[in-house]
Image (cartoon, rainbow, N blue to C red; front, top):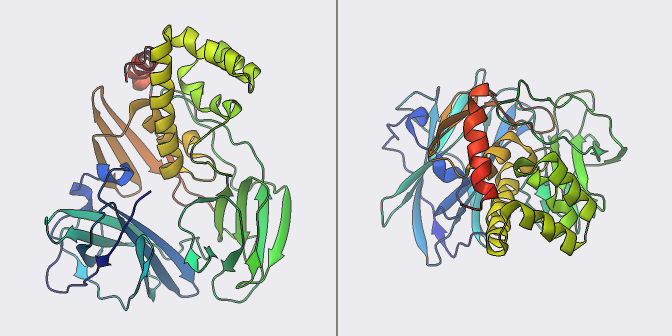
Length: 387
């Protein structure tokens, strides 16, 4: 996805960011063509939190990036305190990874990283809220590399890491076919049950190998199955986040098809002739049909890549809005909300964090009847292949 030949990291102490998180336009977070990407993954270990991070760049020549870490008490605070992490940095193929550890906070605060291209002076800001009761207390490692993605192919062997307690880690497997999101103008959205009933379970000691995971679905790993702590991941076989089977295309097309059309797509199964006829009947032109499918499923792929949660990315609220309306022109973050703003059509969507043990970073759209007109107008453009 992104390549990195060489990154040199410097930690500086003298200058603060002098810019609040709430004042930044974070529209680069979900852009595959963005120059840099940074992932932050806090993991609880007893009375401390270890922050694992990775930095990637699309640059194909050696590039120097300046990294600056800062602690802020709120999203609106401009000047925070500079953090000097006792960091371990390693070159890992196409990315740089590192980690540092600090005590669990009494109250939440923001860890902010400013990344600057030293030659162009272009900067990006990334952040993570650090909480005393953050529920993630483990992760998977494969071939010595921490697994960053919320989904994996399940192939090969994985090393299981827990909170450091040495207790067995219990895996719960779910094959629940989670529902697709309702339109943004719906009265309400169905919420995921706090605790689902697993289809199967097994246990393993931390530090041991597990896998391959042969069954696709959701896996939840916990030291205590009665708590709200653990870590989860989805097993999705290659080529996910892409789809290459006709039967898999029916679901994402639900947003832009009628119920009758979607039923016909399901009836077509893997019969390409029948499937193509439904799409051709929608677009009324062979070339428009090709353009429609190509553009639409590129967005589905990106939605799966960025928004996969306890279910596929296209099934999440942010995934749905991204597929239909595209990447937002502006993204603002304020507390537990992401606010997406579009210029055309002029529309704003507010997503509120509604995490659970299955995924603490899951977001839910605040639905409103005001979205009805812009939704159907945009769907009409899709059906006429005007994207």
